Length: 422
Image (cartoon, rainbow, N blue to C red):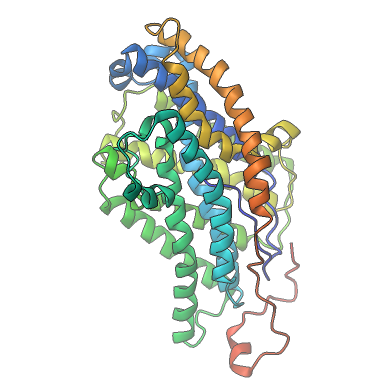
């Protein structure tokens, strides 16, 4: 999952801190833990095929549908990354400012992603053993390039495939920003209008997302875990970022709008619950096969769950009370560690289940044993690894130029007099 990034200030902002982002991330991580607890119990009990045939509600009943809705956690992670990571680069492009410093940006992402992962990898190797891994495999594992779907460590750190997707997105974002700037310079600074630039970003992101979704194969677990297989979800996060920048300087905090947003998020979650009641890959959407239909629905739900609170906050609304709580803020800050450690603990405890044939009790036992320990591990990871690593972060913001040449001044998009910073 994506660790929480810091957001840079922009001329169209400053781009505000997304206060609901960490709580949403925390809830999504809990959903992933519950899903993995249930699938671990089903796998150990020999009832995994029933899940494949009937969906989550088949073996687990109505509670299974709610648990299965947690699979939307992964699209939520990717949409959050696409939104928060790309926003400073898009803001610089649409306002004609210099892009954030790429070396500092990559360094900051590296110190956020890798130290905690390396410690978790060491823990997984300590618990599971080398599993045939040799020194030659170490660089690939350290750089989250391991084919986790087929790795001997897949039952202890298999969720790390999402970190490989994240790492490659971090490399792609500065490239996307540079391409946009170079293209604008080659066209004499056009398009110059801020709204036109935002529309261009939205069109390009949508086109790339649709093309990536249609062309990248996902026929098996190995193909599914490849970075390009999920690029479309990250690109949808860019659409959220473009919409956020388009609303800069606007204010609308009516209760009706807030309620409509809450209804949209609840509808997205209800859709995920409904999807979990279906047999896997049994839903057909717009002529897509079952697997692609599910991915499209989950991606759309992820956009709504992330995008609606983000845009409401941009318009000046306070975070929803259900999200703006100290426990959820704490959980969101520790979500990365929770994500890293829960799977290896679930796998370890699944071998000690007193009644392995009872998958429902097994799900409960795994949850009440592995979840608290995962939270303890997450807290230790934060205090001992993540927080110290964050102190090594550098500023990625460039110093504004007080004087501009005529050519540069023509390139810069000057906001209208009525545009107030948000």
